[in-house]
Image (cartoon, rainbow, N blue to C red; front, side, top):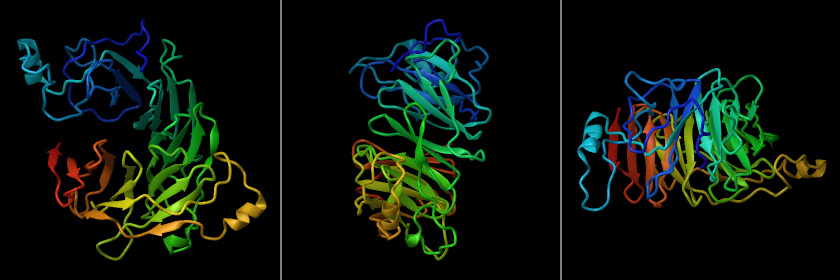
Length: 371
């Protein structure tokens, strides 16, 4: 990860500085870039209030992001009085070396993604734009080198995700189609839109209502998953931009419930889906693949399009595991993320709770944090 350029007007603070209260999203993104060594230290990015400092703050601080903990030192070492005092005053300590305020969006920042090399960051906002920042080539003005609009009509950006190779990224908006761009922001195409007049979701070629979330497969460059207000999750073949699998969550009662979030586990073998009714469900990601048709966004010959008129996707309506009312009845799931240990899932809900789940005992959360 490149540090913020020297000479920037932004303050530079030492690792271990305490952080401040949580802040509402704004058109500015403050990035705290960590070069601290040791396990558990990584680059951290937070939505901030246009980079403004608080009273008495000499370098700017990120919002609260974790539990009430004190950074661990070497075994047996007791933190000094200053560290204890900092932890008592403000226990959310972030190991950061540099701070940079990335400005430019006209409305609240709603999503972000950092590529695996740490050299580029994407930000998406409610203004319908995606900004691409290149830390290696960034000038003192800290501006994005490219701005793209995934869809016409100013749809809010819901999610951004880099491909595992870092050469493309997925942009999910509140429209019914996800967009794929190359690393420099050139459009490679959009996923297929389904027929909104078909009631059977198994027969639609794509989503029929606005998207809510999306993620690229962690190891397969040619696959991604999206969730939608049409009540389904869909796994896509990125080469042809046609769906490979339609996932229909199991409902506790008749009707349609929006799928509000989705995520792959770290191997891509599982897909998790969060629902508007507070339910979390898990499915196997294995399914019959659609025919490969060339590079992303390629225009297909007429005869191939005709072949694809037939249903070439699998259908999955039986989750392997379900946690109903995971965040309270009627409290939508707003975020899902798997741990790299293979059996831990994190969830966030509209009930203002953050929960930790063990997939080996999925009935009840291991831990729940409020606020």
